[in-house]
Amino acid sequence: MGQPDPWHGLRRYTDARVGQGRAGVSQTTREWLAFQLDHARARDAIWQAVDFAPLQQRIEALVDGPGCCQLSSACADRASYLQRPDLGRQLSSASGQQLEQLAKQHKDATESPFDLAIVVADGLSAKAIECNAWPMLQHLLSQLQADAQSWHLAPISLVQQGRVAVGDEIGQRLQADAVLLLVGERPGLSSPDSLGLYLTWHPRVGCTDERRNCISNVRPQGLDYRQAALRALYLLSEARRRRLSGVELKEQAEQAAPQALGSNFLLAGKTKS
Image (cartoon, rainbow, N blue to C red):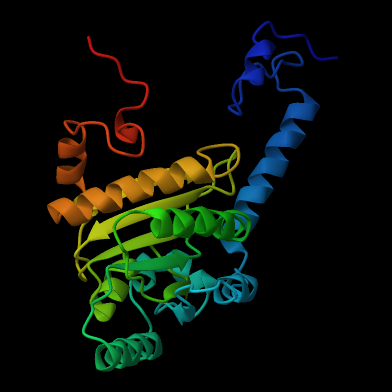
């Protein structure tokens, strides 16, 4: 029989594996089985394919919504996606041509460029997209519409087998000022459904990570959708005002005065020494 562990009470405050108790010198059977279950869920999240059809239907049902288009990366299947990260950062030739045609039609119809291209990519967690992409988009689009500044949105791109950098090519082909990518993050044993948001100003193929701003762990047990949307809007507004993103935006944002949204979210919880 397992021995009680005085650290067990800490588990009320974290999903981390603390206070698990022991049976002799080993883990208890209960904790070992729980570990196996969480490991299986993480593996399933990586290998499972996303069905984008329900998300597309919801987006297209929005009144005055931006619409959407389904795309794919250069990866032929999930195995190649996991083995060839470089291919997940590129669009397939068919998807590239699809976006070029869309951009041409837009240019013929209006001279106004896209301010923002929103991209949803499956990434490394199908569960993150299926559980969190739609509620996150609802809050995000609501905040963008309520913002005093107008945002001319490109059709939302839904990308199969996509990694973060695929958003740069999409933004470039659509000639958008900025790209905001929602992607399934690498699953952990306690978080197989974590959604990440990546913002890049003036996206171009070849952008490196210091050009991006990241908002991570968006899910009911992490950062809630409303706060994530407010942070994204703050960063987008600052990126457009300063015409930059990434490390420089973070450094300058820490010196910025509180904004109309209430406060500088990047400084939440910090105190002066």
